[in-house]
Every structure is written in structure tokens, then in C-alpha cells.
Image (cartoon, rainbow, N blue to C red; front, side):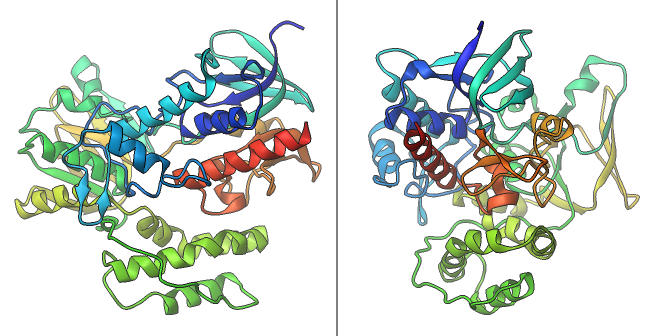
Length: 444
């Protein structure tokens, strides 16, 4: 059969890379693995950064790729990274581009002396059935795979509202849909007034980069709340919470409130308690019904995102410096339309406020994954309880409409959050890859 592949990994970022690394370490032959993704394997959207101001938001001992060697990255960083700005009182927070280099070297090391096969394309659709999956690619080719692992990570951002460009090349350049790479910085004049649509870590990355380039213009941050995530502190887990035997969404919220100390959220005391709560939350989440998961996410989702995704100390320090100069202004609301002309950008908010600037950056977060949506539409998968992704079981097998699961189609990475809980961090994704690689080897 033409273009028949044994095992296809969909994705080119961290999740796909660590999946390949753990398969190779478990003895799966390099010749059996094909990766499909348009970018350099291991870097994807998160670590393919041109800007040196985009940093990891966790200290050096936390990105754990190998459970038996948790300080592997920390040692590599000491030997291979020259970054005088990485050290803070809370630990070392390295540049994202350097972490991408680390992941790329892991792939090179495990696949030597030959390169792992990678097809530089995007998967447009996935169809078929058990052990006979058909993948349509954007390079107009078709592949057949016996086994498929979806490890596509987070899709690049897309605008969350309507964007109108009045006819001119300069109007198009005034809106930056995907700021993750940092290439936009080269075109920004220091006197421009910048609009940041969104108030999370992406907005903080942009602020850190602008401040690092001595930006003089105003920066307007549009978001539902006038607050940024706190800076990481030098937290250490001190104890283990004793959860109630019977839990519901309401009891989890009450227990967390009672467990967290009345201390600032940027203090080691508060963050230590928060991190002590996290290890049990996934097992509790997986016990809940879809209705209970929706209820808990509705009550706790925004707060979880605010304090789970804390920022690097360098990034918060840059924000504080611009704040002291009165260059930062929060504008509370949600955008309904953006208009770009040759001379300015205007964001029209749902509450009637208009925000004018010279350029706007889309910092609203990840976009919907079209491949996962296609799987739901074609009835090969079902939506997860939060309707954010497709559903998987505890062994990462994709669930289908008939109430069962595929035995040759899996998914790991951020897309499994609705089914399995907190799997956003690099170490959590790497742990999934490690577990799935072991399962595949044992099933051979």
C-alpha cells in the first residue's frame, strides 16, 4: 500500500517531540515513526521564538522530561545556556528559545545516527477506522497509518472578534494575529501606542519585550479583568493536604479556599500551598461526571488560569517599570470589532468603549483546533466535557460516538485537559508521553 506508515505523530512542538523521544527510548524503531508538522520538531508555537525577551514562566527544575532524571534540563541549561538575565530570587527562568533548543537536541540525540522522518505539512483531516487511518495533508498528499498519536499542542492564536482592514498594506501590518514568535517587534516604532487584546501571559510577554526594547509609547491592555497573573515565588511544597473522602465541585472550592493562606498570591507561602493542592486535583477531576466538570470549571476556571499560569519574575518586573512610568493602562471589556486603517487601529468593545492605537497584538490565547473539530464533525470522536477538545480515556485513547475508545488513535497534550485535568505544563505533557510510550511497547 502506498504511503503506509506504522506510527504517525501529528504535531511539531513539545508534545510531539517528547512523544517521539520516549518512543525511541522504549525501543520503538526510528523507521517505524513518522512525524507530521510544518515547523522544526520540538519548537512548535511555544518555543520557536525570535525574541530573547520571551521566557519560560517556570524555574529550571520544573520542566521535567524524564521522570527518572528530573534535573536533566537544569543540568543542560547550566552547561549550554549563556543568559545573564536568567537568575532571579525565585530561581533561573530561561528564554523560551533556549528551551526549544534543548528539546531539539533531545530528538537529535535519541534518533542518531539518522534523522527521524518528518513530513513538513499540516494534517487537514483524519478519517478511517482501527489500524487504517487516512491522513489528508495540506501538501496534497495522502497517508495511511496503522497507529496515530495526536500531539499537536496549542494552535496558534486567531482573532476572537471581527477584524476589518481598510484597503492598504500598512493597514494589514497594524494587526498582529500571532505574537508568539516575537517577529512583530522589528516593525514597531518606540513611540507607537500599542493595544494588547488579552491580559494573560502572552500580553506579559509582549510587555516584557516592549520594555526591553525601551518602548516609549502607551500600552493599552484590554481584558475582562484589570489584573495580571502574579510573579513566580521561590515556593516549595511543605505538606500534603488531606482531602475530604467525598468531594463535589462545591466542596473542592470550599476546601481550596480554606487551605490557601491569607497571604499575597505572589508570596512563597501562598504559592507553596497552591502547589500542594495541585497533585490531587487531576484524580478528583477524573472522578466527576461531565456535568460536575462543567460546574467546577465555571466556578474555578478563570481563577485557576490566573494563578496556575504565573509569570517569570523578569516579566513582572518589566510590567512594574512601565507601570511606574504610567505607560500601562487596563481597559476592562471584551472586543467585538477591530478596524485597521493606514494610520491607526480602533478596538470597539462590547461595553461601548473605543480604544485607539497604532498597532494591536492578539494576546487572547490559543485558537480552536480544526483537526479536532473535524474529528467530532465526522463522528470519529466526541467532545470533551468542557467542549474545548475531544474526549480521551485515562490511557489517552480517543473516545468515539458508540461509547468505546479507539485502540490505535491516541491524543496527548493540552487538548486532554477537559478529560484528564491539569496537563498544561511541560512536565505533565512529558509524563503523558512517557506513560503512552510504555503502554505501546507493552502492547506490541
